[in-house]
Length: 381
Image 1 (spheres, rainbow, N blue to C red):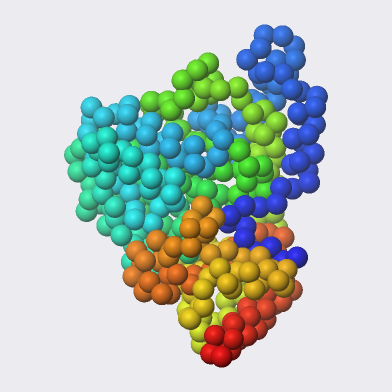
Image 2: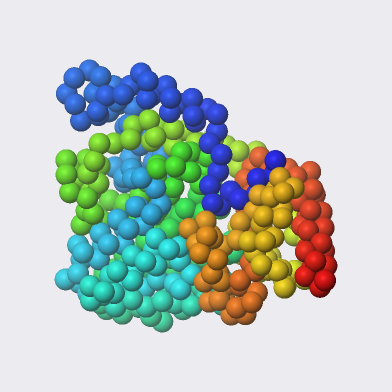
């Protein structure tokens, strides 16, 4: 099997699963309990928090554990909107954000907030200048994805952060889900107030995530209850999941140092291997893009047909983002980039991880070429 859908989810590391089982079996106490077993769980939770903070190069008190990217994005966006509505009700985001950001914005619009959606250029890039043009005195939040989940374009987060320093009323939230472990981001130097990560994107477990919340930032919690997570996210903590996530993040960052060049080589083989195919249009830019995502369209073919045809060869890719793929709709990101509807409807995404090899890339490139040729001939008949 060649698995090339790592932006949708990754296979948990064996050591991560072992950690989860060990903690679940031996340290199952509620970390809020006063007794010894609860104290053991609390200690493990704080060790996991400290490790995640150290890996992100932030303070331990700035890490809130959540259930994943969707919750972290909603907590950041709605939490700022509700806590600071007396400052203003204007929010800036882009038109190519993940559904958990976009739909949160739509919900806030229904509550009377004004949302400005900044469009990207033809490569999926959103300039800092385009954000600056929309900033106002009543802007309370800017939310921008670091690495686009569909085409892999890297946004200029640090440049945006410099612009936002001139607007102290506005908080800066970054969806760091696709960038974490692949494309470094210095949260402090970039002026980021809130950043989202999700464990299952870097070989942790589904249902685990975190929100970086810079010291001094105030949110209105989404969940009311026992006031866990610095009173920002109530609910009994998933100790085993967070210990496993911390280990997954450490292992992924270690692998990045060891195998980034291997992944880049695999991506280069894939890009070169399909770029000559006349039916294929590549949408991922060669510059300012992450090393693990390649998006392309196949003229005249339905994306789902192509995905299933490759699946028969034990090669797994996806259409748009996993959250949207079953809707069989055209890629919203590509449409916003100016890609024609027919092309956007036939988009395919390949996404790598550090275990993918050059050999796998060569096999996949040949399989893609052969499958395109075969399906195109079938259609002509």
